[in-house]
Length: 77
Image (cartoon, rainbow, N blue to C red; front, side, top):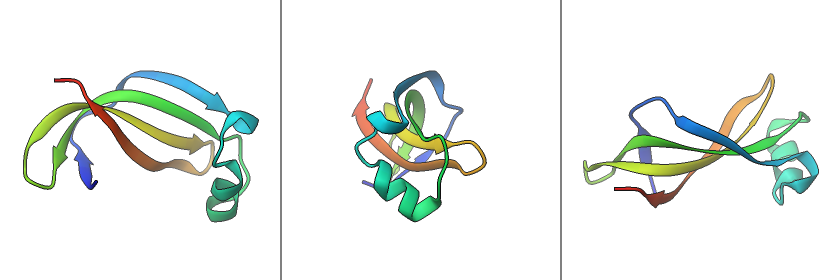
């Protein structure tokens, strides 16, 4: 599902770190070595149909590499 993040992400929590991440090998292959973390947070997103909704978002990030692979998990409104 395509979406655009409209606001800053709030209520950020770490879900998993390095070895606990199932997609760790894929992340390292695509983006390089780093201390990868999986995080979740809440933000307003704009959907393809133009709707703006509050949603829970998951993503991966590593220092020096940045935020990658955003996923929309569920709507909160």
